[in-house]
Image (tube, rainbow, N blue to C red; front, side):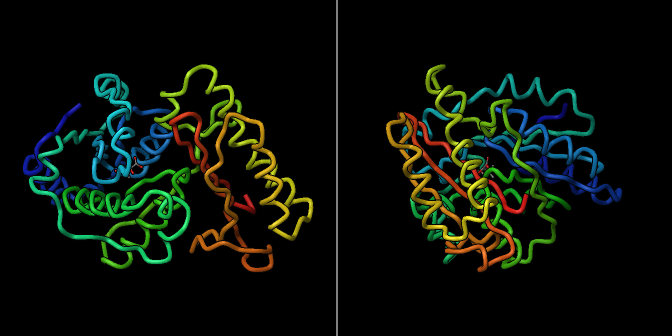
Length: 282
Ligand code: PAF
């Protein structure tokens, strides 16, 4: 597998591929690859002539220094996992390669980032927007692949692609779950075996909310209260549970307000913060 750590070499390689008429798929990641990432890569490999996977733990999007320091970095293991894919190339830049200087530009996604992750992680989507737009400029992919698990990130990136006229298609792929329902996440690696057992409460809360809504609970304040109660006397500290419009992510009070909703949740297990969501109808 070809590995690039410098921007000009990668750009030259991709320019030549583009001239040969090849389509380029792009899967940006922060590494510690799991089955969720691999599902994006597999789809990208199927749909494009060549695929770039980037691994870059982007300091700019962490609002918590400890979370950045402790973010799992398993580059050797990741490289071995990627080696089996045909026509897949890895971009593994260092911090100074991506940020020779700290960017002065600030991205503001308006209402889209005033809820949920944006509200609880100030500056997070500015960091995501800056790094993803830099990566889009470097790779200039035809298609870029993201996981629905980070639903708000998907909506922010779709907004950025529209507003800045990036000439690419964003493809959002379904969340991949462990057998017990826990959404795959690199942060799951930081859970102790005891915490891992409790983490399943997160998807269980979403499934409970889904069942209530499907059983005709039209008043979402009742659903919200049930989910708040669900976490009482558990080791999980609920940060938010929101029922929102699936596209603009603004809170909704009843099912009549939109044809599709998203149930979104974030909770702490010790110092580890986990998020998840499901869309209804599925
Ligand atoms: O979802 C992630 O892993 C990151 O937020 C991304 C999109 C690679 C940007 O750093």
